[in-house]
Image (cartoon, rainbow, N blue to C red; front, top):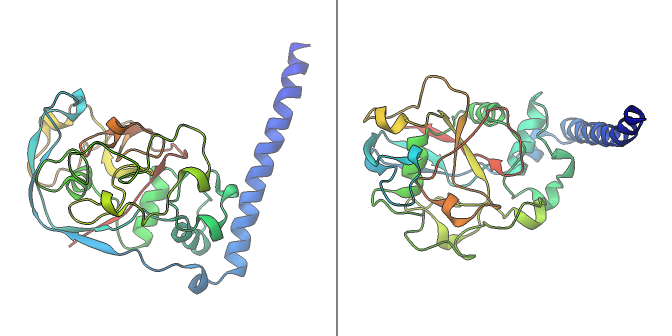
Length: 273
């Protein structure tokens, strides 16, 4: 009886999962066949040049976690960073041009409504492949932090003020909806970083290039750190629509297995000068 009951519960779930996968695949095939790339592709994402130089990375403050210590000086060469997070519309053009599998929750995407929202549901490899397709790459953790923080050691991209609804998209709970929790990538003019980048705090966590190590700051090189050579987790930065203010700190670090797909995670690309 227990086995029969389990099957009766699991069967509808399996049917729903298969139906969702089939719908997403059908949507993707329709995009590839019926929408020429020239029509499907949105405008190129603008990039901002981040000048070479030193900045203070990490923190020695009371809020800092062990893996965010110690604060240390890092020199980073010049590079360019996407002004905005990669959007659902931009990723749709990538899917239409390649054989990449659609992200998790792609069956819930309506490009007419969600095209300017950050793409979610993709793992580290998806993000890395997209950036390479665009002739770019994922930013290093040091590049990401300098882009968000500048050179004055600020706590948040906009300064040291505690986040509020005019500065970032955060603290919306855990229930996901493209329309209700994700904001267009051009939002929050007051929350821009010192270099003018949008939503380096909140909206979605952003994959970066580096493997994670809890003690990396103790051994990090002083110039252009690239992270550990290998690891179990990849680093993410910036916090998401679901997170509390403490996760939006410019020096805040987060880690996930690189194959993770969820509704909290997106990315942006960088390019060396």
